[in-house]
Length: 149
Image (tube, rainbow, N blue to C red):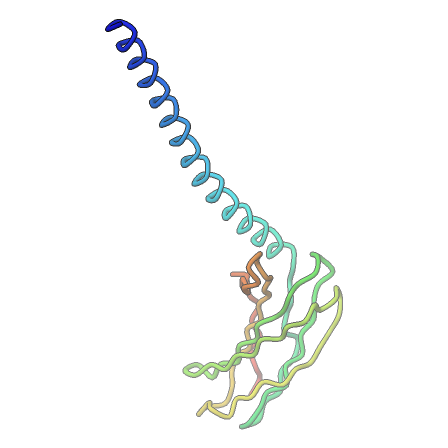
């Protein structure tokens, strides 16, 4: 009878060890899968960013507002919007335009610059895409236009 208890103890110990190993594998699998899916989404957005280019083509400013004209190249897929930054060298004003600018399209928008103390000197335009959570992910590549005084 004593031998049976010892054998049962070894079986229970083995079952517990197997269960702990399976739990550890499940935890590690969950962490690795989560990390890979986050990185995959970022890689997809960066890939989209490399394919799309929106360039400012003209700008006219007064003390209150700037009219910025920009156009898109023929590359890349749909975009979720554009970020326009108008700067006087010390102060910047930005405008987010939530619009899928079609390939080869041109558009003009107005940016309020009444907070700037000096005349606007530069316009920078960048593209953004929405991630799976609906957050704007701005592309690091931008295009700049020097405003002629």
